[in-house]
Amino acid sequence: MDKDYTDSTMISSYQYFEDTLILEIEFRKNGAVWNYFDVPESTYWEMKSSGSIGKFFLSSIKGHYSESQVG
Image 1 (cartoon, rainbow, N blue to C red):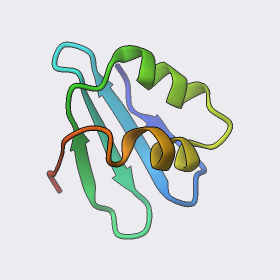
Image 2: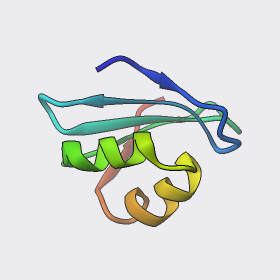
Image 3: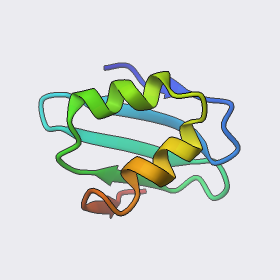
Image 4: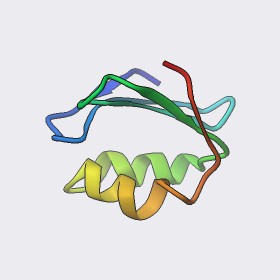
């Protein structure tokens, strides 16, 4: 899927790779890029349609999936 850019104060962009179930998130503050593994596609769509990407990330992604910094 294409990269989604946001006006979130926490997250500048995110991208979902449906073939590997990886959600890639780029953070605004330091430009760090993290991958979150085994994220269901339904969670990606929930994030995309949430009222606040940052709040959704903190409540439903961070600490719920294994992660690795990639950049």
